[in-house]
Image 1 (cartoon, rainbow, N blue to C red):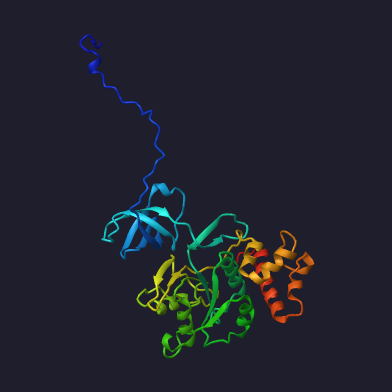
Image 2: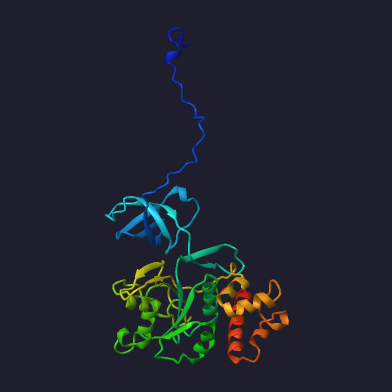
Length: 339
């Protein structure tokens, strides 16, 4: 039996209780945060180009909560922003996005994913042959780009193998800039007029490149931003599909002016997040008539469904082609295929 007679209260060890003070909701203002833009996202690590010049590796701070970060986001960071190897800063602020290119897994999935932020224009890369162009995927990329308020460029590669007349007829009525290029022809990119047009179209803008694998997207990126060495793949002889070579999005500066954001090859582009009426705002002349005349909630698919856009067309053949093109885009979304 233990003899407790020689002990008093000073011998007892008392664990301190949990503090009853409420946790403060006041967070640091981070007035000294350094401005930057996210150029690479890789497994919880963010490569940031700071306004002062250095490229910094960073992680997301807790105060950002669930707010995700993607390539193109303008942010504020604190900590070591010197860019010295083996240092790590913290991203404490994400500025409001001027634009966001979104997609869903398919047209039945309500969870949308932001592909890139703050891009000015969308460049859809498609090959004229090997593999042949897929208008359905081009249409769906355009719908997402118009919904995001971006300008659109259709870049048709391997123009030395096939004429582009049919593709021009499909997309120029929508106001899409169509450029034909073949950087592999004799003389290389500098001898290709289409490549020069594309390079000029990138000046002063942030352009996101999207397209299926195997269409020459990485080849274009390597020609526009020499030294980046994006992996170049080949087309499968059996399936006709390209092999994924770019596995992450990456923002690169083009020496002749502008920035490009290269994204991994796509095989589907869900549009569950797109509202038909909002997408129509990409065509101000048509949207003004639509607001005044079409019934509320009109999907603009056909006159048989109650759409009044045929009244805007009248006897104008150019307007007829434009409306047919817009309805083709909307029909692609309504089909709910995702690809």
